[in-house]
Image (cartoon, rainbow, N blue to C red; front, side, top):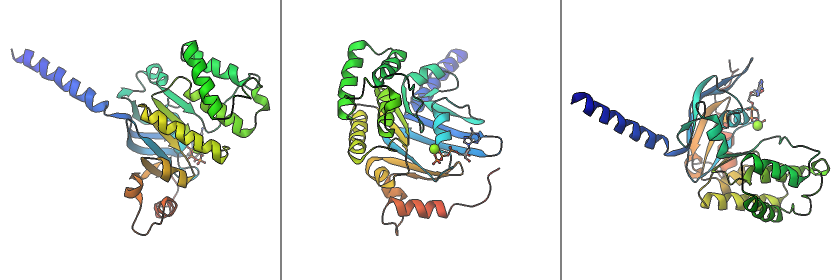
Length: 268
Ligand SMILES: Nc1ncnc2c1ncn2[C@@H]1O[C@H](COP(=O)(O)OP(=O)(O)OP(=O)(O)O)[C@@H](O)[C@H]1O
Ligand SMILES: [Mg+2]
């Protein structure tokens, strides 16, 4: 009888743990990444809630792109773990990757393909049904001003067009988690506005967005919560109002205050 009750309690605890894990879309636990000479990410723990736009800020070399690559399974952590929708990335990498759309800081594009071929390739990787793919491509490319360029080879694209095709590729399978590493680089103000609108719409439809950016007014306007990191360590976390100090006029002054007062010195 005792062992029967014990088993039931164990199952119950397991279910509670599963429920707690799934409370967050992303959970980073003591995430650490060492390269040969530098600790790029240093014991970083944070969570991203379902349905929020989360901004990831920090000076050059702070560890943003490395954290993002760990988060989507492109790099393996030295220590710590990443949970996406409660699932440990290390144990089910393929499952997790299917629900993520990723725009890298330097998009890897096949120059010899046309934009349309590149997007079709992406959509097939994620097994998007053809009619859904066509509808999504037609809508997104029109909005981002890419419809006239889809049948041109990517090698002929301007920097902004390359960025837009990378964004289209990341969104085509309607990922539940959209991860963007400095997505606004190269976008003109109108395109930046449209991308911000698209991200907010996706979040309203149930997706979650994690983005890094150096453009602080955009982070202030767009992000529900944000983290500031430097030397791989978390310095601040919260909504704009929580991060802002009494003296700060805006996010820029909060950012400068927080990063300038962080301890200096070489990381191991
Ligand atoms: N593959 C690598 N090998 C060795 N060191 C690396 C590697 N990738 C990143 N680093 C180092 O890790 C640290 C964090 O780099 P990372 O690219 O994550 O910073 P970042 O916050 O994205 O910077 P930026 O704002 O310039 O994009 C830096 O010191 C960088 O030199
Ligand atoms: Mg980077």
